[in-house]
Image 1 (cartoon, one colour):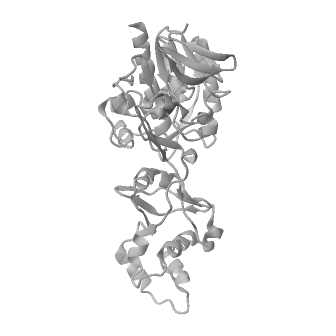
Image 2 (cartoon, helix red, strand yellow; image 1 turned 90 degrees about the horizontal axis):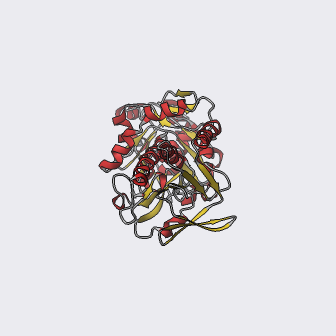
Image 3 (cartoon, helix red, strand yellow; image 1 turned 30 degrees about the horizontal axis):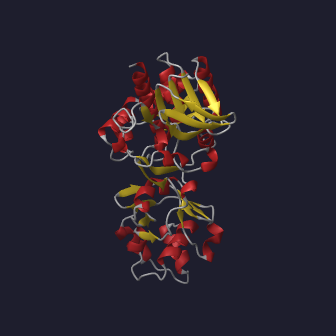
Length: 386
């Protein structure tokens, strides 16, 4: 018998297990995969951006509109609290020039090892290859290497992830067991399909720098990448929600120039130079931006300046759900109490990416998942002790 059953061994689930065990309760963590934290480890391959070191108001604003309960949850375990927690695991951190926070080791494995050691010392039991298969009455059902297991804990934390990167464990299969409270999944923080013309082949893999991009009311100066599959990268991910919802993508190729400055440069005599060479010379446009201008701007209008300032970038929609960094959709927030307990099933709490919220990249997703895990773990412990 276990007091608390945590299902899912990603950042949200492990945080829920840590805080519940700290209250003296027996905790078991079950995960369907052969090892824990697989998506967390994958994120660490690019440096493990844990959080964003910025004032709390700015940090919360990055998540977009939030219900009061979730806003409070994110406030309690914000950037400063997460950094203190990581340092408490013996992981030195550094803050980059943009405010993004990374372990000095620049990978997830040392932190995860230290975290699992702390959980083991606290008595947390870890079960791998235990796949949750819903409920049988009040009992949780698991398919395991030892056969079907029924567990009836005092409280449960579901931290099952979203529906992207299924090979790492986030397959969204759990939604069938919560059909009345789950909003449909959609890709988030994803690239978009572009059917490039042949002349773009030599630019595949190239970064697009020194531009501003906008979709709807959102504007970013982040970079993006021209890939064989389309357009992706941090600048695109920041706009992905608006683009997914139908807002057109517009690129300003010279964000530090005014229309008047561009027009003044364009009327300079070009002699025998081609238009492309003239644009390169007088506007200092690099080959990638010139290629994008030709890709989406031909035939050029007589007044080229407005097109340079607002180039429409046409695409064929998001990349597939399983390729997205994260997902929107999941357990609706109105189906949960402020303590993240399912209103329809007392004693069952939800945390992490399985919630219907959408965090941007840049450290917000991991730190937000851990904040919800902390809230759910505390609430589950309180429920179990009541």
